[in-house]
Image (cartoon, rainbow, N blue to C red; front, side, top):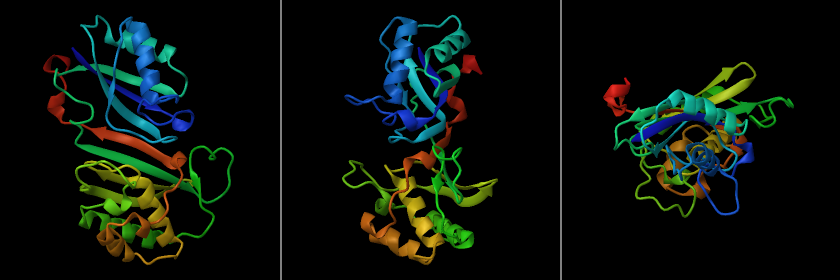
Length: 251
């Protein structure tokens, strides 16, 4: 039977989501905990890959195992077993062919910026001391929704079949002391959000005009876009699936 796990993690201690040799990752940590509790080797498939130091407020993964008598008890025991920077919110049964990555229809990220040094924000947000023109940043962000090919924001030498993404929302908004960039799309390229944010911050500080976004996207060149901002300010906040994904018996 197939199960989905809904969980969150603070990424500072991890070399991203995906397992890799000689590095601590979220995937490996989760698999080890499940395998120990279920006394059987468990492999989990995540909704996507987050890079080193990136956080997830909401992440999903699936795994296969025999019928579980008490799913919520497993979730409780898993939380007790996992380190404090990974937390499971739910485990639920899904259809046998449900896939955490390929069935996701929408993802949302946030990027947090602060403008004053604060020791309590140091691991959570990117510090930008320069004045920022929020109107220019939002004008440039809105232009993302007029395009589909985002090769200019993709990590170099990435092995993907297409650079096309459907950006469905992109905007900046103050939330208390944090300036938060929220972006939603059907899919994202590696490093895409951090490169977009770096470009928008260049526009916000006056290094570039808002309409330059069109030229950058048309160039398809990573060198034309801004530098990638630090991973510590990036959060995966929502992954959306079709309603019919969940097993009928579990609704």
